[in-house]
Length: 318
Figure 1 (tube, rainbow, N blue to C red):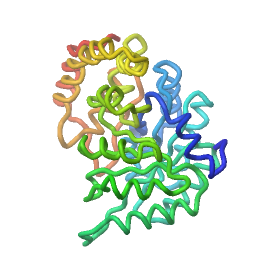
Figure 2: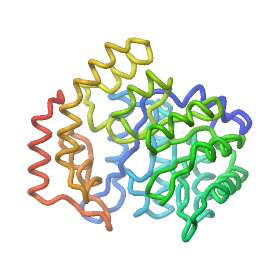
Figure 3: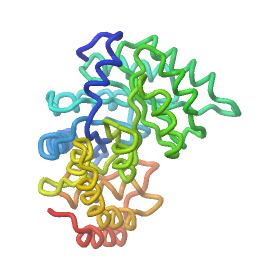
Figure 4: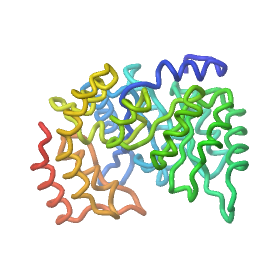
């Protein structure tokens, strides 16, 4: 981990920067076990070739919901080993069972991850969420030493308000948030509590404006950094670097040039198969994708053909 609990916020301000990506987990076609070699190969490409600064491991994109606790622990270990200090590791300890959250967070700390992320839990029958969420994060943070990144998204059935997040941000080792909410909410949080925690969202489309207008220091994070970039075509990295350097016009031109790639990816994605679609897109890029696990569905041959056609005409340089 490399820092004391009391130093977590300062460490995050220094290191929670640049373009991060949410990793997918490759499974073997024959028995759906974790493809360790394939995972290592992907991480080496993402970090070594694409220059991704941090990896969000075993989150929703990584199908954590279909993985055992031991497999999730294994994924943390794989990521730390494969990244080999070249990128920071944000391990997802999200789970509906709090004991599992704490067990995963402590394991992440033990094996050398830099941070853990925990999404807001589902509160069954609740109509008010602020105080239960505050107490939830306060308790978890008290049991771990590693920096804790919050995650609020619609899948939980509620969204943490900016005011509640600001209160949670007073906790010693709460260092950031992946805030998957409407822009006006994360803009308010940035203004009100950006000095207490690092704010970001999963929207690559909105990233440029968030750097230029809100002063964001990190993209935290989803799959575009390795789905919409190649060894010879790193336009997300380029426009972000230009924006952070103050070249708004140059950054905007590069951002605009990616629109055809974004449209092709989105238009070819079946609404009921986002995980399978992005794994197949990875395979078209030469990465290790593999099948998804139940309850998710794999692409049909027709869906693969449509995705391949969109990929080949999208304008991404291979």
